[in-house]
View 1 (tube, helix red, strand yellow):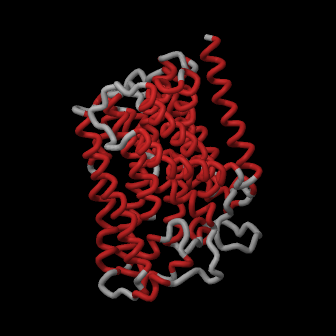
View 2: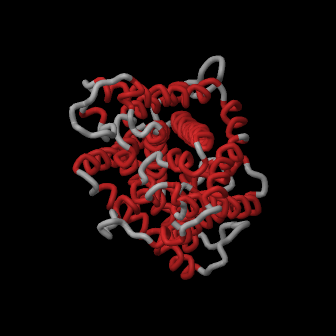
View 3: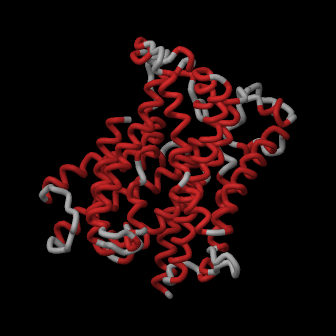
Length: 414
């Protein structure tokens, strides 16, 4: 985690800070790429970003469902009165669409869909409601994990930190994909640069603080729990296990707090991503880069309802799959998007050396290239791992990429 943070998060945050100060307008990375490589690649960047965001949103109802399931020991059949699916497995099947005719899978899907509906409602009602809610979330989300870390570190077992998996093997593609998802996304802050005062000063400070908070928020609870006997065997952890870990370390009350934190945190991530992506689609429609249908606002709430409902329809399909399946699609677009941004940063240093950059990464062009070799390689490796994860992933990602070409053709023709 620390290596990935240093190798990818820090360079991406630095690139975001430099180019957000150079292009202090709303639009962010799309503006950088268009300035560097032209209209075609600017549209692809916008499209890839939107695809990544919409797919990413499907992860949060799945994550909350997994957390609830883990706290209840995976016994959803007991909770919802559903019948066994006949597979002999205790956990819900990864692909619910393969068994949607069974009561167990159908009930699991309905729970995820209900979570998605509840998560979406505030975005339909008010932008201010989402913004004000997100401001209050940070302390509420982090507090249970601070308590968990403090309780777990009271009685550490250092030998647990050096344990290896039973067979000594590591699923490197999945590890890379999950780590990439956890440490990426710093470029999202660029999309509202036009609303930021003194971006050359604000972005480096804000992103620097966020980098430190993110590393501590991830590393401290993991480190503390992995070294605590009450947290169970870390080799048995899976999606949603933190609720079970908290219950073992602090009791039922801490498990409940982690569930509440997970619900709030997943809603915050969902709402902010949906806010960004729905307004991005609205802006593309207003600029003639997407069908005008997506430019409609609600007559009372003034929110982009058509864009929101279109994205919700996609999310409703994706939540039928498991976390890792959704992640392969999400990370493919996120990684290709990031690689294009790194290339744009280098190209602009070469083609527009006199461009005003209130904040400039304190490296020469050669130094910048050297710094971005590793994160670009990580982006390429992640994209390759995602597209080769399965035949289905290859087909879905390939078709989605072709959609970007079709979008450009439609825009060019119009």
